[in-house]
Image (tube, rainbow, N blue to C red; front, side):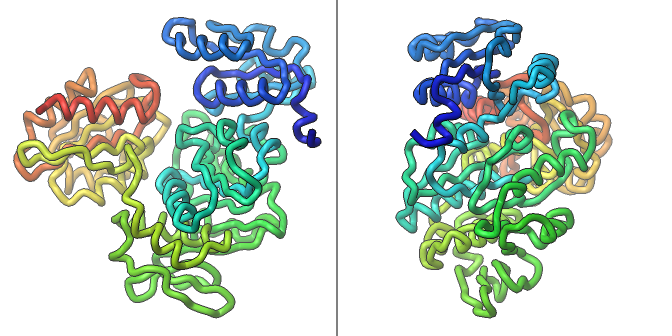
Length: 454
């Protein structure tokens, strides 16, 4: 048994949160010989499947509150990303000297393979799955996990030392790391997000920057040369720096020349792929593609494999996902657009007149940067969820605006008001938790509502 497994075997561990990552880390810890207790704030109603899993695994649990059992005789506590680190039960535990770790930290202790960690305000899901496609083309053993909905702790035992785990990492997951160290790490961009959780942009940025803190000079930091904040990271850390850009030449990394992505290393310039051959379209996706190229080259992936991956990959579910065309009206599911910047990109990417469905749980974002695009591209704004009044105040004077009680009602209104050649776009600019389990649940319900129109 390795030293890292020693930190788990025969230990008494509490896990907070009964969602996917909480269940996965509880299962992994139990398999490795820990005595696990799982605590969930939600009541038992609606947790039937989760409770059934825990009973099968013989894992003790509580629902409806976090009681003192969370820290009684516990060696450490693991928290799911949705749980703020400053809640009273965790503050009390830490005052008692009980360490609190994130799920990705504990899963890292058991990980044998190389890790690619991708974070950023926008583009991280697309870039993570694109990296998976590229690694598949190079015949590397790989998994894509993390914030994409597949917990890191559910895949650590599946991948060999020669393999790669591509992790989409959120700022929440980085708040409670200690040793987590990716071989290749990137912050794709930083724009205002999660300001309902962080005091200001600086504290949000500091959470993201923890991604690099344990890297050594054997690791790689991939930097967006076009992003004003990210470009400042070149002075940070010990890792080797490589860059990506869609707007200018970079000495070491990936950039655009003669309508193609090119790789420059040691003054040697090689073309990767013509832009027109890349499977995902739009300026934001060109940046994601450039980032994936820089990551892949840092891992030693051949250019031919990178090019095949870029050509084959057609995008991810819930991110500018084409759903259907009904009576010449196109429907696009962009449920993954949970912040203002994502919607800004989405509005730029749709050429048709837009019937925009937006709203949800407000994350403290400022919606006014969307005004110019809403004025020029949106025919009708249909708002749902907690943030609908705030969005109406920011944008409602520019365009006809309607409030809907449900997503299905919003889809029906959009369909009734749309004309042939229009596009109904779900791009919320908000979190989903006021009405849905997560953005995936919201996206699936949108697609069901569209199907029901037929």
